[in-house]
Length: 339
Image (cartoon, rainbow, N blue to C red):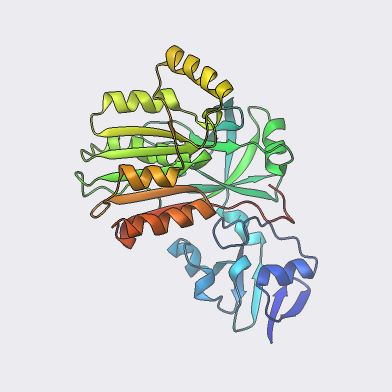
């Protein structure tokens, strides 16, 4: 059996991951998704070689230094691991603004205290109180925004949600990253782009859209944002204005239902704010009917993991090449470590 050493703790792994073994032994390792996506469980091997599969998605410099994702690591040789070195990858930042975008979504603006290069649409790990870690996508564009901008869905009993609600402007927090491949790459300025997201999946798409326009992308760009009801849609005025200012941009808000009370409120919102009216339909049906042939297009999918997985398959069947499908699935925190 493979042996794992962490400080004075030495134990054998059976069929479990390094993270599961450490937690079993009482070692508190920050973690969230347990799927190798959020990178909150990052450890470094000081002896032994971690499996390559547990280093996928990490920066080359991190892999070279032995960092790996413990939640998906099933090593085939003995490892000595440490968490302390992970602090060297953190950047301090200051919370400079906290506002509501909708009834359940907060916008956080964070000013890093040192250089923090990133691509709009990538995600970062937000570290609070030293061990509470969650991943959030970047809605900001470094050439247009002076701070990092995150969209956070506030959950009534969520640990990070509670921390965010109690945090005051001026609070210091930690950031790690960025990571992710869901960003605009110049080079094909006339290619059609389809940006589809639900809930706070709008965050990376909003950053990506503004970055593509900043880089003078001239091909058609459609941004589809879905929610259960109109109250879940946000940034409607901003997206409506972007579509009015750029002939190549189409904005399609989509809701699953619109009951009579919602309809009255929606009519008042549209009249007062001059925003685009939502389509009432499942979002997959909108993609199927509005964009039946996706060959040659690039598609970005962001939001809840099950929906992103289903849409990835759907757009492939509608003709989009696998290499042109970029996805950012949002995973809830593991039940033993509530969001």
